[in-house]
Image 1 (cartoon, rainbow, N blue to C red):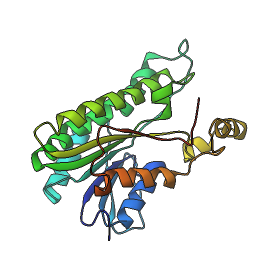
Image 2 (image 1 turned 90 degrees about the vertical axis):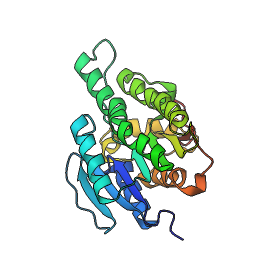
Image 3 (image 1 turned 180 degrees about the vertical axis):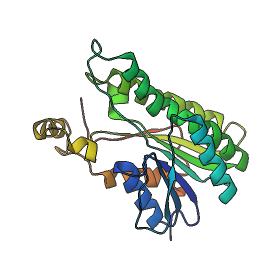
Image 4 (image 1 turned 60 degrees about the horizontal axis):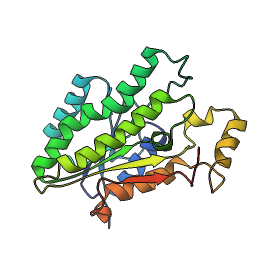
Length: 240
């Protein structure tokens, strides 16, 4: 039986990495997937549709909401995955780079959930899964902006888990906190650093995007119907 038969799923950052792997996995489980990103991408799977989206642009987020409502009249799952990094030691980090990461990683999720969260509450059900990071829980040198954005995601999602279910709606909001994942962005890091990151995990390796996608798919599905307000670590036992 397909986990997401005829369910409408939105995935931000859906054109690559974790987002792309999740789009493929959920489409295989019967979902109608809208993979959202700034750059257009063609997908092989008939159930995956590209939709343009800039999470930092409130009009772009509203347009996505309006398009989905016009086509389907509902939203079953929102996977908030879009994110960027602009690393630097604090003494060298510019205000522009700090704001850019916060606006994409943190406010970008707010820009979407302010529309889709209340809609889920109104329809009485829905699942939101936001992608944070081990860095949001433990911090990391040279990533003050990224750590702040990912920690903020956890606080917002715990708040939304309470807000959208307060009148009895079965709206679940959860957070996935991955460690280092072998996305194209991470693969550009020098090999010696990748080896160092792998050595910081108990499993002595980095994750594949598909491994994170499996967890997101489970948490978003009805199989996890009693899990909400949770932060799920998927980091191979990593200690920064």
